[in-house]
Length: 320
Image: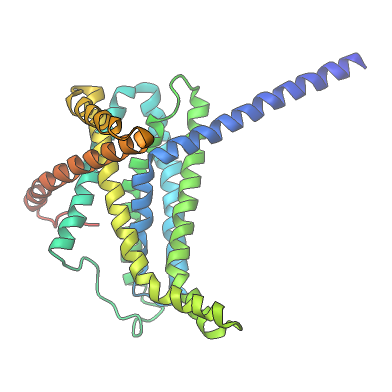
């Protein structure tokens, strides 16, 4: 009997350790995933345009195709690469972070440039006359979305890896990366599915709801979605530029030069001292604003460079 009790006690102790490990994995995944907010928001803001113009019956299948490929890329391709980097070449992580930050700055600045000099970058289609069997155009859109998602997913996984607690065992790093990858994919494409179907849901409420307040909500959703999508694009672009600038500042500081980081830090502390009642928020706001300004400047500087390289290679400049 005493042996059985000792065994049960050991099982309980192991269960406690396992529970603590699960909590630690979930906590680290949530913390690291939050650090990738800029790329995550950008992913959610970018994807709806790839289903724009298709008949309603094809919207969710297209989102599912992209989501499935995104999960595959993160778990099967990017997670093992991240593990190899962590185990054998951790010195490369800041370099990949820097490249990812530069990419975010470039993409954000390119979007701002497109707002200033508008031009359409997607194939024009008529949702009324485009048949459901127009697979060629659908496949082209899906491939473009998966390519964009792969780049953003690589940034997200690198950011998550860089924010895992130092000294964590490799199995925990893999678990945190895997959990963050699945949670981010589910959150992004769940949100995308809701966004692309919101107007249909609003129309259904407006036409079929029994109560007038519910019908009003439906009409408000239908009329408000275009503005919401524009706001989402603006928020995604701002987050991308801010996070890109922040990543560049930290990566450069970690590798070669602390000057930009120290300057932004000192300015933020000085500004926060002027508002002691809200010093935390003011410090964060000033830091984010300066990171964003720097990120936008870097992005604008990269636009002609990327254009020149693309021209030499005989292809169009990279576009979202």
